[in-house]
Every structure is written in structure tokens, then in C-alpha cells.
Image (tube, rainbow, N blue to C red; front, side, top):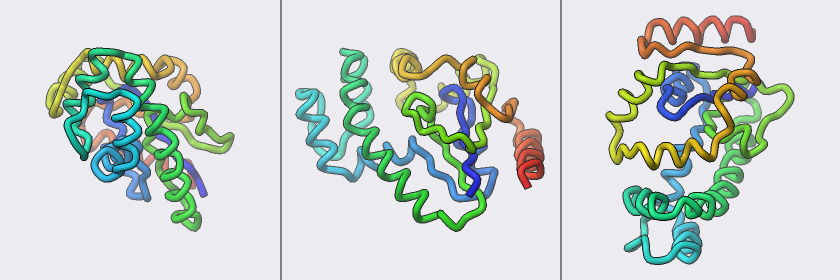
Length: 189
């Protein structure tokens, strides 16, 4: 199995590009959202670690953002609870797809959580800061302070770019990006 890992800045288009590969995708951000929505045990642990922020289950994104804005240490507490669950889900995804030739791992904290394997193919998604900001502003609950808190968890982008096997420059034009994906797949086959 070839593990293709997609990394880059928040809002650079990692998820969109991951789906263009038309292979099974493990999207860590979607997994986290699912955990917040469905995992009552996780909610209880977060509520115990940082009480007085969450009204009731399921965990609401705006309450989560508020807790992190008020105290940046809350982000670490939440991460310590959520990341092991995401890792288990990743293990299950890999077992389920063990017979696939290629899987895509869209994991923003791939290097930070030491998930990297020697044979992984890492693709760095590069986009201009202005385009990223424009893209992020379209999202619900856009909050630049919160986004910067998330970025503070991440290794420098230069490091990720240097560790990558391929770079896709995302100009937010589907045709260009699709061609880059096709070229990478061609090289891997």
C-alpha cells in the first residue's frame, strides 16, 4: 500500500486536493468533527478537563473556539484527549483499506504527531497567503485568532515543504490542480 500524505497550511486546499486522487481518504479534520458530534465519552472528558464552556452534548464548535480563545492551554488539553481517538480511527482506516494500492492521508498534524513512515509519499500544498485568507473567510465560524492558535500547534511550513516529495501549487483552479494530481499518480505507478 502506498500512503500519500497531504500537508500544508490551514485553508490551502488539502482536503479538496486529497479527494481529487479518487482513492480512499482519511481526513483527520472530518474525523475530529465526527468525534465532537458523536463521541459522548470524549465530550465528558473534555468537559471535565475544561469545565464551564460546554452547554451540552454534542460539542458545539463555537463553544470550543471560545474556550481556546479564552485560554490557549485549552487547545492542548483538548488535543490530548482527541488525538488518541483520531489515531485509533486512522489505524482502523488503514486495516480496512490494507488491500488498496493507494490511500490518501489528509492529516494536518502528520509530522507533529509523529505519524510519518519512511515510505510515505508526502505532498505539500502551497498556496498564496492572500488566497488562503480569502478561502478561510468563506468558512463558518471564521476566527483569525482561533486559526492562529491552531497554527501554533504546527511545525513551520518550511519544514513540511522541505520534507515533502512533491509540491502542488494550489492556484484554486480545478484544472491545474487536477493535472498536478494526475502527474503525481503517473510518477508513482
